[in-house]
Image 1 (cartoon, one colour):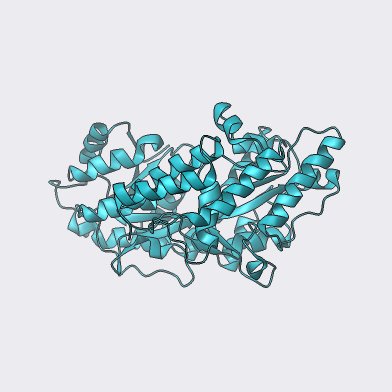
Image 2: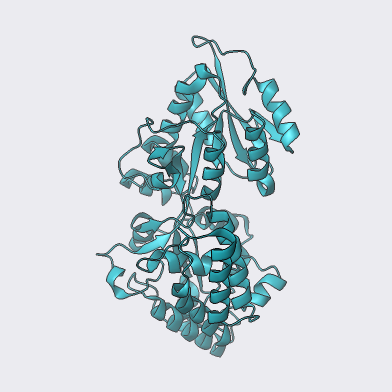
Length: 432
C-alpha cells in the first residue's frame, strides 16, 4: 500500500519516523513548500480508514503527503508510548483506546487541540477532554447494538426485536428461541455473548443511574451478571468457560448461524457484510436493533436508548515541527467533518458524526440491512463512555476483568466477587 511505514517495534518506528522527517531534531519544514504529515495506524492492510482519510486529505491539499506508520495492533499503545516518551513518533497520533489519553497527556506528549472546530452533534468529544482542554478529536464512534438473525427468528416463530425490548424481554426471547429451534432440530442458541467484560460491565455502567466505574462501588453489576448466569444455566447461550476454552469468536458464532442474537459494537456491520460477501459467513437476512434497556423508560422508537462505546480519535504529537501544526489541525478538523464521515460510512465504518447523509451512506453499502429499525438503532442512541478519561481507568478495569472471569467461570459467586473487586480498587487504586 502506498505511503506506508511499517513499525514492527519501537526502535524501528523511531528510525522510520526520523527518516520520514518528523519528530524532534529534524529540519524545519518549509511552510510554503510540500509538507509531509505522518499518521499512526495499525493493521493498515485490513483497516482501510487510515488510507481513506489520508487520500481524501491529499486530494484537497495537493502540497501535503500523509504517510501512515503501521504499528503492530497487539502492541500499539506500548510502541506509541515508547516513541512519544523518546521524543519521537508520528505527527498525528491515533487514539486507539481512550484509557491511554491521560498517559500521553500527563507526559506532555499531546498538543492542546481545543481550537479545532468540530461539527455540531459529533459524538465522543468529551472523552478527549482533561480539565476542560481537548487533546484529541473523535472521527469514529462505535456503539453497542443488538444484531439478530431474521431467518432463525422466523424459523422459531418468535417475534423479532422491535425497539421496545428491556433485558427481561431479551432473556425471555433467548430462552424461547433456544427451545423452539431445538424442537425444530437446530442446535443454534438464542444468543451469544462474547467473553469480554464489556458485554456485561459496559451496559451496567451505562444504563444504571449514578453508576461510576471509578467510584469503587459495584453492586450495580449484580443484576447484569445474574442475568448472564441464568442464560448460561438455561442453555440459551454458550457458557463463558466454553467461549474462553474453545476460543470462540463472535464473528463465527453469529456468522455461521450458531446464535440468533448478538450484542456487539457497530464495527461488526462492516465485518459481517464482508464475510457474507466472501462466503466466510452464511448467507442470511439480518438486522440491527437498539440494545435492550434496563427498563421501559428508554425503549421505543420515540425514545433514546442508552448504550456504551468509546470513540477513536486523532491527537497531535507535542513534538511536531511547529511549521506543521496548523496543517495537522486541519487534518483533525477534516477527519471529524461530514465529508470524511460520509466517506467512512461508505466503507462500513461508524463515524463519530451521524447526520442523515452519513447514515444514508452507511446503509448504502451493499449487503447492509435496509429496514427502518436498523437505521434507528445505528443513528439514535445515547452512547456513554466505557472508559472514563482518568489515569486510574486502566488499573480499575484490570481488577474488574478479574471479577468478570471469576463470576462467569463460577469460581466465585456474584456478591463475593464484587466485594473483592471493591476492596482491591480501594486498596490498590483509590476511588474518585
